[in-house]
Image (spheres, rainbow, N blue to C red):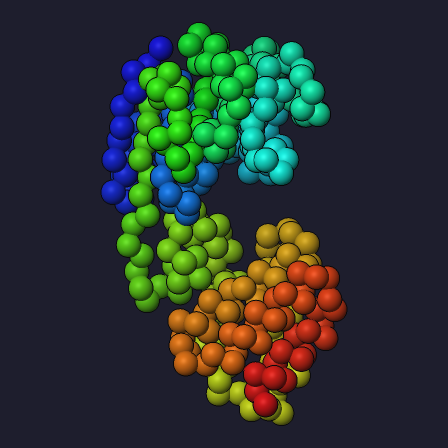
Length: 301
């Protein structure tokens, strides 16, 4: 059992030091709880620590490559399920209840040694959503952890985490740090460290959105079709970079365009209204080409 301690993260460098400390092979930490407000970068920190535990820091190993591709067999992510957004007992123990969970419960996952990695790692997101029976089952695993298993928990409500769980974890407070006000990537991320990390992985695409927004008011109405084609190319580039669907990429492009317009041209209220409407139509599976054409025609009229 490890005593609970709190490492105050006054910025990303503090969090990096904590992750580096826990990542050392000689570290006795077996369970870490990242807590903080939404957007404080908890999932990003959790993934970095998980990768370090899985690979012992070898970024060129098979475990590292499979982790990057999202298919490492020794990494289990547990998330709240259903409309109630709870973590149910069937997600923790293989004694199934009536919760209709058909995935791999934690108890089954940790029963065997790692297949390709140095450790098995269990990430429990929003751990405050553990139902009572699920909490009791998890507590047993944390009290007497298998030597080949590490646990990571995240929460936005540390006060809702039972003291018995806290006492078995090393707790890290994650705080949103002030972002550089003139950095386009931070603006697009709306000062969320976790979102900034995601955006930075595809920096060129997001900077293209920013540049498009920056120069948009200078374009003339006769250039609306060309501007629409450029915006569609940016959305296509985002789709290829992130490997998400076309609708999600088109919606993300419009969302980022709206954020950029709000910062770069705060008085252009009509543009923000038109972009919000275009975003709504894309989400409802409208024809993206026609929506982009109509949007740019309205903006440059």
